[in-house]
Amino acid sequence: MQQIINFLIRYKHFLLFVFLLLLSLLFTIQSHSYHKSKFINSANFLSGGIYESVSGIQQYFNLKTYNQELLEENARLREMVRDQSPSVIELAAAEFDTLTALRSTIALSGNQFHFIPAKVLNNSYAKSDNFITLKAGLKDSVQREMGVITSKGIVGVIDHVSPNYSTVLSLLNTSFLTNAKLKNAEHFGTLQWGGRDPNRVQLLDVQQQAKIAVGDTIETSGRSAIFPKGIPIGTITSFKLEESKNFYIIEIQLFNDMTNIGHVYIIQNRDKPEIEQLEETRTSEE
Amino acid sequence: MKNKVVLNSVRFLALLVVQIFVFNNLNILGYINPLPYVLFLLVFPFTANRSLFLTIAFLTGLTFDMFGNSGGVHAAACLVLAYVRPVVLRFTYGVSYEYNAVKLSKGTFYERFVFISILVLLHHFIFFSLEVFNISSILYILKKTLLTSIATIVFCLLFNILFSSKRE
Image 1 (cartoon, rainbow over the protein chains, first blue to last red):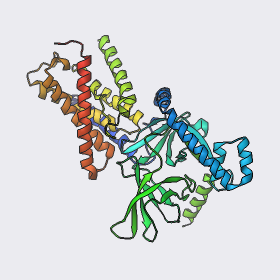
Image 2 (image 1 turned 120 degrees about the vertical axis):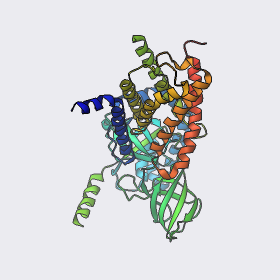
Image 3 (image 1 turned 135 degrees about the horizontal axis):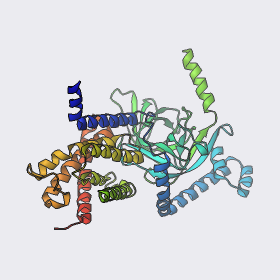
């Protein structure tokens, strides 16, 4: 017994070191497995609050770009509304609400998707697992696994939520996976980021029968309950067949400039519980 | 004693703010974000209790992990740095150096440079290995470690020279 105590006292620094090292490795491994990290994230009042107080200054420098983006979005939405029905334009001219228009462009039953606007507090893109911190949380009815988009394309999926803040698993994160398809066909594949260039992503597992060409548009497939169908992602810059010659590997240039994101929309899918419940019953029957 | 606590707290807060709002957004060549916050651990009083130093290093890393959503990557790297520091100290300042008398700013420039370089390289290698977490991209890890380390070492030396209280 005496020897054990002596041992502990003699090696107390080493034991403390090993204990803390194991703890930090545990956090690290958790952070690399999707949706497991629980304790250490920036959606808390301390880091969220500090990011918020400074992001005001940072946003000021980017006001011009954001205004330009909003103008472009407005113009595009106006065009869409005009194309859809002439009667709407009269209504729209009187009172034009971007969010309502955005919702109507996604041709699905009226209220299935609700858009929550949010401000970006912090955005990283130089790491291999990137996250974005948003000024919107439980109080704004943000929940985990909601999709995040801008007017130009997809951004990521909500990862952690606190009362006032939330973190987004960015598109530029090696754990991020989603379904995407060709705009002019129904062939779909898995979208993922290679971990290097913040402007490029890869679309894998597209059937070799698909007719693809450089410059084609890629959009979300609507196969998951996170993103509605038809949110733009990017254009094809190159493609090749993988070794087995059955599937394409497609390189995509993103529409979004992931290095400069100021305002985003969080997509709330009101039918999600219903979809999930349905899918659960199906898997339990199998 | 009290003076030391205040000094180190101020240094910690200053480096935290500078790291998060300036250096994390630098993106030199698109992906180099130097981590000069390690200077806090490099110049942390050499005479301090070792257990205390290990714990503080761990908590420092965890703070940066919280801001960067990186799990425990900073914490692990800082912890190893803190554990290895006495060994590197003995290596650079010679076997005969007296624990109590040495301050980083008192060494020659060469000694300071070697001391900072070894620890920064080690810290960054562990940091990027854990961050990328993929053995097949070892070349990418090494490239990032090397380039970021150079930037960090430059900034650490600059800060060290600028803010060292007594000049010789």
